[in-house]
Amino acid sequence: MLRPILLAKVNTDRIEPLAITPIGLVHSPYGQKFAVPRQPGLAPHAEAVIEFFSPYDDEKAFYGLQGFSHIHLIFLFDLAPYDHFKATVRPPRLGGNTRRGVFATRSPFRPSRLGLSVVRLLNIEVKDQKVRLRIGGADLVDGTPVVDIKPYIPFVDAVPEAQGGFAVEPPRLKAVTIPPKIEAVLKDELGDRRLLAIAETLAQDPRPAYKGDGDNKLYFARLYNYDIGFKSGVEEITVEKIVKLGEADDSI
Amino acid sequence: MLRPILLAKVNTDRIEPLAITPIGLVHSPYGQKFAVPRQPGLAPHAEAVIEFFSPYDDEKAFYGLQGFSHIHLIFLFDLAPYDHFKATVRPPRLGGNTRRGVFATRSPFRPSRLGLSVVRLLNIEVKDQKVRLRIGGADLVDGTPVVDIKPYIPFVDAVPEAQGGFAVEPPRLKAVTIPPKIEAVLKDELGDRRLLAIAETLAQDPRPAYKGDGDNKLYFARLYNYDIGFKSGVEEITVEKIVKLGEADDSI
Image (cartoon, rainbow over all chains, first blue to last red; front, side, top):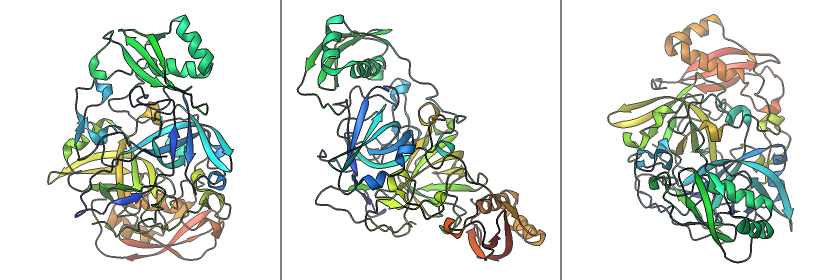
């Protein structure tokens, strides 16, 4: 089921709004906005599953997609409050205090409220005659509504010579230390791949950028069915404690 | 002004539709769907201008975009009739007779009715305190509503090693012959760049794919303020006649 969607207020006397229907939603390891990777592909072992609503769950609608290694997801930033247009935002990549025009960023606080991510297509699964897509490297909160799926066509979509403005390089990663006892619990309960996904996610330092290099305070990231408590130093992330929440979603 | 938009019928008892407001529209050389390039970047000299509606025309909303060479456009296929979900479509690249799942294609006949193109950002222009973006290689009909602009960030958006399914290579181009008298008129009225854009557009053979290699019938492509009459042979496109329509839009 979809979360209730915060609809944007639209100026209907000037421009007619469009009605767009979500075709499905994402099941991901990220239970909250906090700790969701800031770009797709940064936590490649974090798998997610896209479930489709009827009639979009028809296997025929995906015929031919198996030949593509990557897809574009167009999704809705449904957790980003948005009630009026703000021309500028403060991108985390610039430390969270420098303003840029919203159309010069990938910020969720944008008029369309649409997000765009390139993700790896791992598998097209059919269960009870319903299609689900398994993807890798998703940067999406669990429950995010999906608006469209498009194949990634390298000869048109890949422009490696493009100039990247202020976000020219991948973010710096920190080393992640997980104490042996905690590691053993996570490995036993979630398995090696999900343990790796947790480390990849924490390595990006999920704290708000304006917090600076490292503050050694305890933060919690909700990953799979755990709240992972960690502290961030200048060069290193250290897991301090974990709190189990309930049953794991074994599909992701 | 926007064209009246054909709204998709949505199944509101199951899924709540989203309201999305266009932020602007495209002025392009392509007066009709016929002859619009089937992928962005195929007619690099065909420039287009994106005009923004208030309040999205604020210069501050684009601050920082000047550092990016390319942008993602999310737009609406507003001329594609769409009243119910069809699971499969017939992509032109497969000859127009082979069916593929709609989510395995970039077809306009899709539930979201959203299109996605990477285009070159040529210039950010400010006129009467309103921002306009000049872009190159657009594959959009004149008047297309734009829903979002996002910077193209090469380290996340460019995946040159991606596998491309059935559309792995650029389409084959045909040689274009323009008789000297017609070329002189177009060059004089439109200039060298627009003449080149016309040749690039015709080189892709705009006829419906199911028409086959070449049929030597007369077709008209509406480019700038001309209807360009051409015939398509197996290897070559020949311009036969031109009909002037009215005043040119000198911004594109």
